[in-house]
Image 1 (cartoon, rainbow, N blue to C red):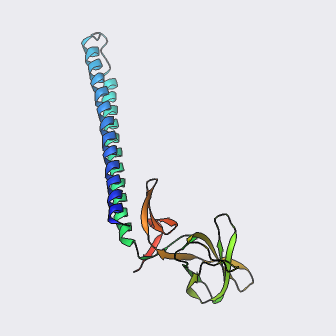
Image 2 (image 1 turned 30 degrees about the vertical axis):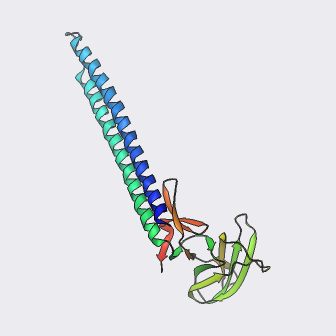
Image 3 (image 1 turned 90 degrees about the horizontal axis):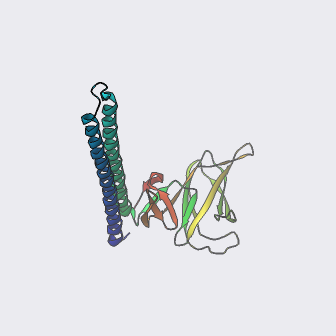
Length: 225
């Protein structure tokens, strides 16, 4: 991500923070105006009350407590929103520092970058493993069979379909299946590896981009060089 892009993201966060602050101020101003009206009505009632049947103090005390509670809630909401935005700004800076580095993430999609995509998977035993690549519509594009070693394994896809056609860089769904000794099959846990290319803000979430693949920061497992 370029410095200009990072600066733009920070500016957007600052603008959003300013809007939240303004919204909080507007709510407090409205509450203050309503509170002022309430006090005027209260004073009028006290001045014109029937001495033989005075106002119930518990009633307007309860009203005062409610105004105070609403004010505290407005302040709390504004503070929480600002805290979220500051956290997102920090994640943007963290993500920008990953740009250009090899990143391992938890995802069922593989980023094909510059004609290559790599996954890591764990096999419970030395066994045959089937790795299938699909389009988002569910069409099987490629399938590879290999003999996996027990433990951690790494496999790299060359971006070609089963017929040998080269696919464009993008994000493709992956399924890794192991053949058990009893003749059954089971899905194997895997991670995908790609080069971080940027960060993006999406619906109050900050995501790391690996080419066409976007993942939440919570999915990042390791960052290399």
